[in-house]
Length: 101
Image (cartoon, rainbow, N blue to C red; front, side):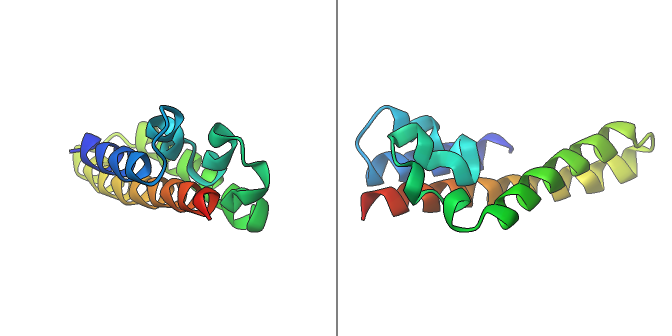
């Protein structure tokens, strides 16, 4: 279930840029443009505070999920983490898209 957003983002990025680096670029989220040699075109360069906020929120969700002991709460944080990863990967695809223009 967690691999579906990764595979979809990698596929879309490869369709946008026919390079080997485009497959792994969405994993870097807003900093995906660095993988393709476009430091000025990344979302992190355009909206740095929101990029760092997204990174910090993902770390916080991971830490909370690891510390929760009840399985029901852990599952709810897993869903939240899945939603966060979709947003992270979407920002990576947008960064790749921004490098094509």
